[in-house]
Image 1: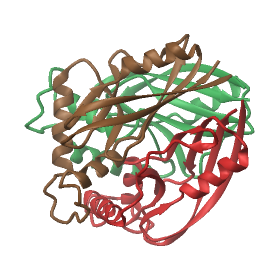
Image 2: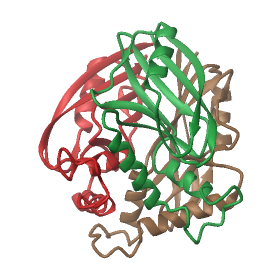
Image 3: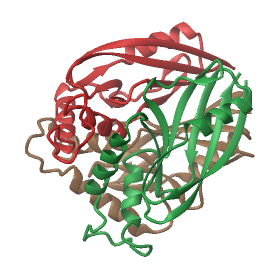
Length: 139
Length: 139
Length: 139
């Protein structure tokens, strides 16, 4: 059994989903681990990691629209607004989704379903450089 | 330390929660692993894995009703509707919940609290055969 | 590779976020594990574990207010109310957040981002003693 840590950055360009499945696959290849799990962890509180439908971009746009309406930027009772009115909604959208995902690895590949992709979900309007940490455990 | 992978299917019959705690326990028994973790992962984007109150069925019905109202099927701005109007709500309900749960294993048993059960949460109206992947790591 | 289990309790005093990052760090120190993951799991269905912004208390208050409005205690269609009208909302708020978090450990420390803290999110109004289970796996 081994532990293999790795990291990478994703440059985001405003709110929305960025697929990172290929980057995770290449970290698993590099680790040499054949069976176990990979945990993808994002080191921020204003973006998320989610598994989502990876085939149809309209599904991602509808999801983004839903979150924009569920946690509106112009919510009048928010007081945490030093960084702008997209700051507090971004923390709430992160809490409503996930900071990490853990996926099984079998014979060196993630066991994702046919339509599953791993995405960084950016909640801020400005461009950001997001740090991701990948831990692969297994044999 | 060992890695033990297993899988099973659950046949769902429309929207709602199906308890799978016993199936997970039997996979742990079979693995022989006494101490570690189990990760239960569902290979789909229109259903979820959640831990939920397992004693009172009214709690599960209220939860289902809440999700029906939070992400209504007749939402007019959804454009991803090729598979029907329960398709896009199912992806959003999945993102708002979880694709996997990780639970500690101590002396061969999951350390769930008294009222915790593991459930597959089906978000589609039609019957589906859902694939679950179980990874048990430990010693 | 080793598995190290530990547990502790947190006394809550009504709804809100209680930071537990230091308690988790001390369990990791005690384990002696330098590289791997820690899974923090709460053995209840009416509170959550979340990673959240740890610097500004207004962010936590806004988050609590958002959840109070998203799942109101006076929701008229809830039927699971034997323990009071904060009971069913607490289960739903738990399902909308998380029962556990898994965080990478590198050189004996969690690899949290600068503004990330681990919190117990209490959803009940009364004081409770909450049981947390910590599983550290690695080498």
